[in-house]
Image (cartoon, rainbow, N blue to C red; front, side):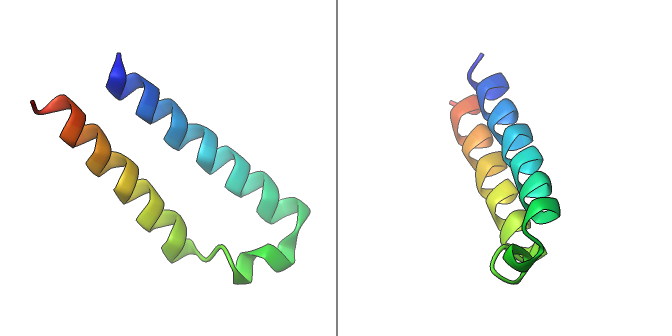
Length: 53
């Protein structure tokens, strides 16, 4: 159940990031592709931590 929660968080984050980029193009200078990838990596690392007890 916990990993499902984190994957939903990642999916929601990506959806919001995509919508924000479309609505506010100037945001893309702040929210670069790299920071999105780092956030996803962070969420996936958290999933691994939680699921490999």
